Image 1 (spheres, rainbow, N blue to C red):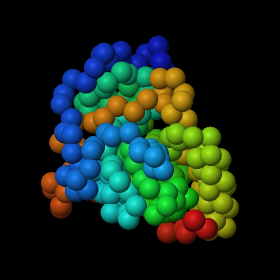
Image 2: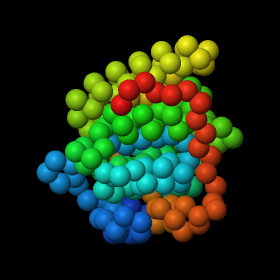
Image 3: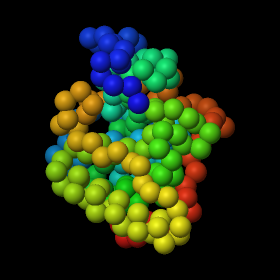
Length: 209
């Protein structure tokens, strides 16, 4: 994992245009949550399949893919792939907790990838493919820790490994900032339905929701 001193510097603004609308949900791509809505950020490998996973869930208002957890300001995909930004590929999820709870989203997150693999996800190897949850409130952070511990117990009973998922607050300077990805990455598997999706879970069910 690159440290801050070695990371690419980046730039003061986006190096590319980002679409305004979500092509599947017909929502504002990067709108702030309205009253009663929440936002959370999930990293579970390649963000193409991860985004589709979340946009299909009832109660999800909008999704967007981007980069988070590193040091480079407004990175490009090519920069992230060098491993010199520290960023992970992330899905930003705005949701209505009256329809789908944060716990239910976490259940999907844990079960649909392998959170024990460290800096990889299946055949996708590199720091950008690591598992992480970026929380926007103290309550979300509490819920993630509780959910993680429950899932670790289930993994241990199944003789699986230890969870390596990073838990980071969006209030954390630098590494808690979300940077949107290029237009062609947004809703990629809607544009290319048979495109690559590397998601693969452990087969272990997460208790509760």
